[in-house]
Image (tube, rainbow, N blue to C red; front, top):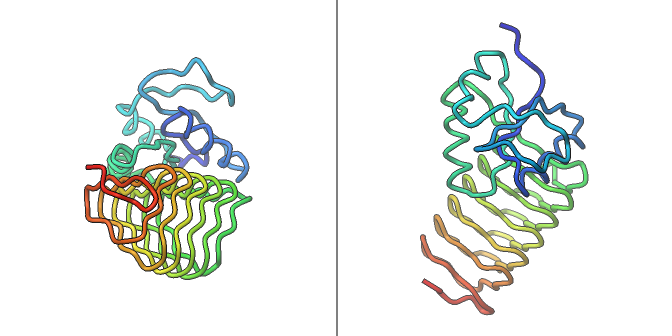
Length: 209
């Protein structure tokens, strides 16, 4: 079996379109997309390859490279692990217009969008999203399947736990620990540690539930 060079996009809604644009900007060819249904809005003209029941069939045909276009952290993490278990690879995509230090470690399947800025000695886990114009300062630790939303700012020496979501234009000051499965609302300013499974909103941040 010959391994195919094309990538397959998983998820083709709003976030998937952003990822697709970055894949094309990286001069990679997309063979088609996987989603729960065929999209009527298909601006890139990608072929529809079916739902996630097609992963094993596509891998058997030689398609090994998959790009994660799913915004939801838990769903993205689950799908990524299934692809890997079947013998596929979730590849990392870094938009050419992102600014990423050479001293940054980035896990498989992570997407770094246009305008993102990541400073030295940051460790980013697998299957993360560092979205448009997000900023991560020095010595941060970003665990698996985290989503840093557009225009968010993460100050230095911060740790963000698995599957946490940092909302649009949120700010996290330096040296904090953000727990697993935390949700930080849009525009929130986080000034103290956040325990796992919390939802925080406001300036300064307060627990919503």
